[in-house]
Length: 199
Image (cartoon, one colour):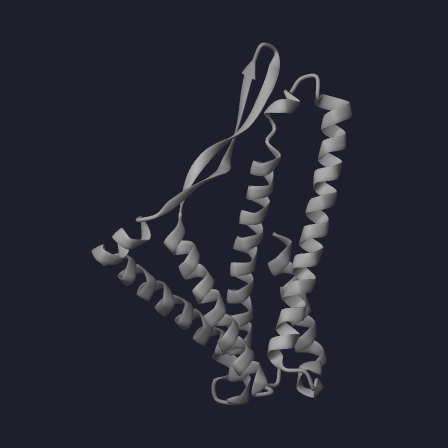
């Protein structure tokens, strides 16, 4: 997952250079530019990985693994899933980063602001756990599904390896909730940074 790593590195540079304070662009544009750049690098790296993997497979091990059994669509689905998870993690990283540096304006808690982050994380985790224990909500989460090949498996038959992706049922409602949470985190992060906090 390259996206959260690249965005984290970019935010670390912002924390050292303080360029955020003097940039005339809105925080929304600045954050989006970091995300788009990271996603672009991720897509390029995946394309190169697929090309390299195909070359190695075609000229090195194609005699021992059935080429026809490798489903490109499923490989693409796995890549999209991993990118989506990386993006979701990135929104949380940006959110906690913005809170951490926003708290730097308050001298009394500046040295223990990491503790505030831990408390926020624990409180949000407890709230999530309590919400998931509500039967009506749990039933709603599991109501609609779609199948996607996310479960890779190897089988050795007739002196060849058969590589396939088994279909996995993915619930739709949690994905929509994760998208909604990501939007909220992005809005809050942009709002905090528009305050021109000293990062």
